[in-house]
Length: 89
Image (cartoon, rainbow, N blue to C red; front, side, top):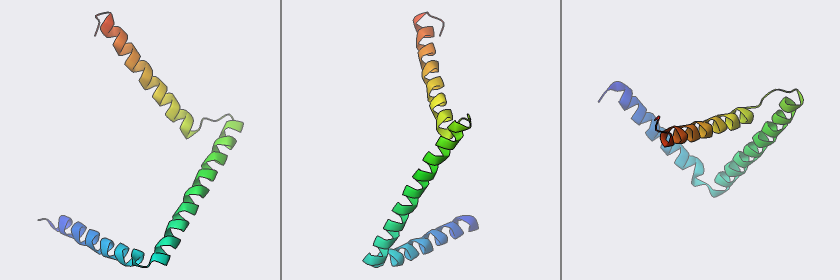
């Protein structure tokens, strides 16, 4: 076993032990969960606000590009299906 793999396994073991200790106390675990939830809600609010500002400035947002990518992917699938029906594929 290589040194890199040994170090990785040791680090994973230590982090697992640390997480066990961290979440052993139910009150602490609840507080951590609440904090994570709060951070996620804040990030969602920030993302929505950023999208509104980007649209007001006539800039494309990340979600616009994602939606466009999905549309292009769908069109490619439909084009392949049509090519197969026409005997070109």
